[in-house]
Image (cartoon, rainbow, N blue to C red):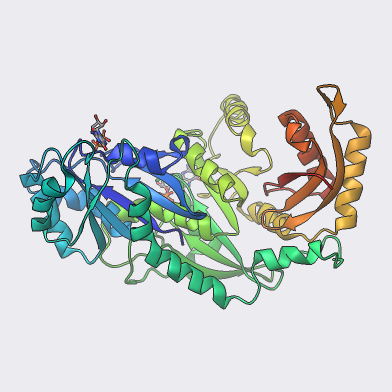
Length: 460
Ligand code: GDP
Ligand code: GDP
């Protein structure tokens, strides 16, 4: 699971400045889902190769009637979902009543919480920050988000314990993905086309915006009588894992829709949690994105797809509520989908009606195909042969009068499939040629439903 850091604090203390510094802003996912009124931004960040999620909770100014209820609605959710809470205060403005109200709330939470005094540039930071110890939340970390000062130290302090835990878990595994990829590098031949995890259940995450039909689809897949609604303690961001068998194959359904209900979770949360969705994508083998035919693809769908793509997940897209639409409308929807989904054209689209069950069975053909594609073992010999064929059919271009030359290919791993190509001036290859190669490999290997990553290395 990706660690989650939430930024809380009153408006203007520098939360979005810190958010932007920590994340690649273009990936930020802005939550404006029904029922979630405040702006909350979600972004991916990276500290020394460890991915984590940052949530900017939006401002709480403390003047709201009963900060308790107000926080309970929105920021409380973010706090509850977070592993780490960074409580930002303004070192220049000093402590305010709102800061104290927020602190009072945070003290009641059993959370890993850090007071972070921002805007410490150009002032006597130590004396300005002293009063924040009264918040009774421990040490006060000094930063200047606008200048990046103290930010790395802050991450180190807050993330180190989590990273240590993650590393310990990794060490328990006998073989990780890198070891398995090494097999190719050592020239150990593999049987072409054999998929890796045929004996493990496929983890399938069903994701999508509220009301697109995830619960209806989940019920449909599980069979109405199999869905037992029962109370389970747990935090909001944990999805429920439901094992199931279909055509003698085993799956674990990652239910983000809350078909199986939990105790003590508010309605909004039950309905939709961005963190829960991001975690489900991270943990899945195959992501099934459900969209509502009548609503089309929203910016949030694109952000979720971007996240799935970034994580290298296999993907199937179900366009739901395909019932009761006339042909003209269907054509229009299809054109619009083609236009917006070009960047994930490896994913199969299914037009279904979860309500009537139409097309639901066929989804599993694509889910299986995507999973098999992602875990398919391919020998070095095969990868080289395909590279040579691609190069013979369509030469790489000349760059400054010299021809880019591809020399050698081998596998770099799977899930998603990674292919490493060595050659001369490969870093000069235009994107169009990289796309050509990727599509060539996709066709030759008969890989659908998963992204393929090609890495280029200079030299032999
Ligand atoms: P938010 O409302 O908490 O998201 O706050 P913003 O990130 O929008 O920042 C509020 C204001 O504080 C902006 O004008 C920022 O430029 C300024 N600011 C943010 N970080 C720093 C800092 O480290 N030093 C100084 N001097 N100003 C900062
Ligand atoms: P979730 O929030 O994504 O879990 O969505 P739900 O499964 O709760 O469905 C939201 C609404 O859409 C409900 O009223 C469903 O009956 C309706 N719905 C779900 N699937 C379909 C479908 O295939 N066709 C139509 N017409 N309505 C559907």
